[in-house]
Amino acid sequence: MERRVRVRFAPSPTGPLHMGGVRTALFNYLFAKKNGGDFLLRIEDTDQNRYVAGAEAYIIESLKWCGLVPDEGVGFGGEYGPYRQSERKAIYKQYADSLIENGFAYYAFDTAEELDELRKKAEADKQVFSYDLHTRNSLKNSLTLSKEEVTERLQSGQHYVVRFKMPENRDVVEEDLIRGRVSFNTAQLDDKVLFKSDGMPTYHLANVVDDHLMKITHVIRGEEWLSSMPLHILLYESLGWIDTRPCFSHLPLILKPEGKGKLSKRDGDKMGFPVFPLLWKDPESGEYSRGYREDGYFPEAFMNMLALLGWNSGTEQEFFTVEELIDAFDLSRVVKSGARFDPEKAKWFNRHYLHQKPSAELAQQFKPELIAKGIEVEDIKLERIVAKVKDRCDFVKDLWLQSHYFFVAPESYDEKTVKSKWKADTGEKLLAITEFLATVENWKAESIKESFSAFMTEKEWGFGAVMVPIRLALVGTSTGPDLFEILELVGQQECIRRIEKAVELLK
RNA sequence: GGCCCGUUCGUCUAGGGGUUAGGACGCAAGAUUUUCAUUCUUGUAGCAGGGGUUCGAAUCCCCUACGGGCUACCA
Image 1 (tube, rainbow, N blue to C red):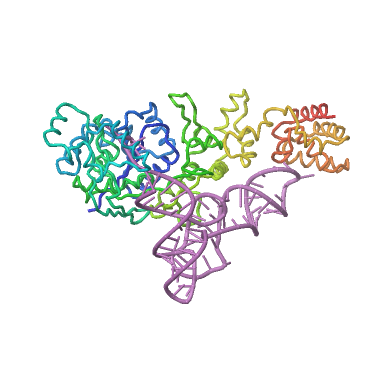
Image 2: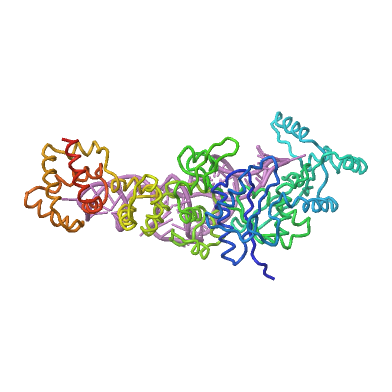
């Protein structure tokens, strides 16, 4: 019987969602949609100490902005709720109990301080303490203590944790959809805590129980979980769920653009790129972290970039709509090795999407900025301006930098250009040109160009000597679109005024 | 330290026994643009090292090196 494909994205609300997390969500989403399945959002808030206010709302808003809208989950409804693990607290204990009953787990009474002590001692001997088959028999747990004492400790309300009793020597072999066969020997693994003394399950227990109860068919998560896969497999087995256990896929990590290690918030701060989808204000420190959205990235560019970081379609196609991604997506084409993030390429994706967007749409996104500056322009004209300059922008926010001179006169002139292009007779020529411009009747780029050419021929002046100076007067630099287009859009009177002003200032 | 995963241009990647090792970003040059940018063309640059296996290895195997992850009552 084919089960309906169900995948989940299960972040912890410990802070803003990292772009690596967004990519994990994206791959889950693509896989679900590709297979006509469900994409769920589960909030894994079993660690009360690390809970950060606002993080959950941030995660939900991020997914929405990215277009990765869950079919079920916190904030999205569904029949398998609640989807917040803290609200499922009552569910987990029975499974921990049943594991103990069946001999797969045991109570452990060692305090955190005692274990810390053991770790320190081991470290001093250049050893590593591990709660495992070698040490469990000399520690305080239901394997070493008498039945009576265990009962007594439990009844007296003493704190305890439940640990998984890792089998002594078994090879756990599992087929990872991305990595292929991965094997572990249980002798190397420790007795992980499944249930904490505060009554909450750890990730391992909660994750397995919830994935089972929520009928998850495929677990697609980051590589940092690969090492705990054998524990999870064994848990499914011990709980009697081995036949319906999900398939596993472990995604490669996103690494720093340069240097060692995985991508972190600091890299973004240092090199000037966002690491998070949305702007985030740390509730504790009040510190801000930039976001892709606020930095001006289009969500479709962000998704496209993320999809190609660690996955490819096997073709040479680089630009994908979400629909195309869904169609092309295949877990077996996910790359196994970690990928260094390249902020330049992220920008390149955005540039591409910006160039593709209709000027009218970009104009509407640009408009609020102009209004804030007290500038009013008709839509038609703004659209024409945007059409002229959008090719030189990466982001909507670059539009102003590239088009400000259409709205306000330059306040200074690029020194280098002045030095090399502004000759002794330039002012004189430009004044003659303003007189000519005043006589132009049809103020359209084409006809201005036509009559201007005639004027220049009559004067026997070279174009080169005046084109750049005129541009300098109108724009302030030697850059920009076709000069006659600028002339038209700036307007006849304003052009004349700007040239006269430049002549006066630069003579 | 132990365990697990990985390693093709600077970066993202294709290629999985016979390829001139392909594409993209970046960078450089040229063309177009009387500017600048866009665009187009071209160029630049790579199979971590060593052993096998094989007629033949980037590709399969082993070792080493390097990189990454895990090694919490965190996820």
